[in-house]
Amino acid sequence: MEFGIFVQGHVPASQIDDDPDGVEHRRILNDVAVLEAADRSNWKYCWATEHHFLHEYSHLSANEVFLSYIAGRTKNIHVGSGIINITPPVNHPARVAERVALLDHLSDRRFEFGTGRGSSTTEQGGFGITDPDLTRDMFDEALPEIVRMWQTDEYSFEGRFFSMPSRNVLPKPNGASHPPLWVAAGNPGTFEKAARMGLGVLCFAHGTPDKLQPLIELYKKAIEDAEPVGDYVNNNIACVSNMVCLEDGDAAREWATKMGGGRLQSLVFRYLDTFPKPEYIPDWPTVIPEPTIEQVQIAIDNGLAIVGTPEECVEGVQRYADIGADQLILSPSATTLPTDVAVEVTETFGNHVIPSFDTDTVHSTTRYREAFEASL
Image (cartoon, rainbow, N blue to C red; front, side):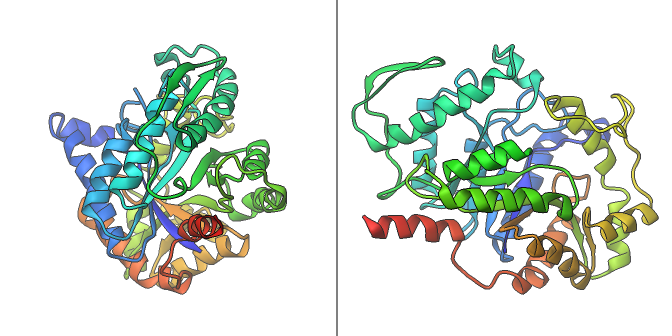
């Protein structure tokens, strides 16, 4: 199993009140510090989101800019878009193809192309999309065309959502193939569709590992018959969870009760309104309260959180290994943890937990890409 860090430019309201002029800048640099720590501590991937207009929840709107900066400050970690919204009203497919290819060069083939169509009507409406259901068709039209732009010097297209006269979209990716392709998924239909298309899955579904197992099994079965939209199959499922790992397990649990998790989860359902909202989520502006120590322990026991000493975190990670997850994505910076604590958590987990599960120095996506190129 491999491991990734998720960042989203989260700017908590409590910190806005304390430092209204400087907090946004400080929080973005907090994400940078965490990713630099991950690079020196065995983590293999970082994933940076793209969101627009979602005050407090995510101020990271131009992830291609952020990731190019991270690529220049790191040596080993792969920098991934989690996701780039490829619906044409938000990002024209030719501009996506150009940016991805340039990132592939600047990162020395360390870029991972995570795709999606957005999950917030606030964002979609801001770019003139009034029917969220249309984004499915937009995605299906755009992704194969982005790949085709990389494969030909004379590209043209007349489509439903975008059109182009004959042009040579430049630059091309770095080498004989393109970066690994991923898609965000949260329901069974998307898992199966991703597998058929040969895409890796960024699993942002909420639930315990045992709830995710049927989705992973569905994907792994369907990908055996994949007809990849890209050059090669990226047989990968990455699952997202919560983590606080410290040498002092009691301190880890204490931080888990005061790092803003309840408010962040409430913001998810305030903004990402194309997700089904569970009954226990209150209507905004009422927020989920922070958990007690007892509730944190229940979350640990149920596999909803990986919290405690490195030894305890190994037990939590094993739940995901047992269900067949290929990557576990964790997000210590998408909290109110102080920067020094978020860095300590990242390094403690990376140095003392990751080696128990990942002993391969080569990224799985690198192996898929190089195997395809060797076959040419």
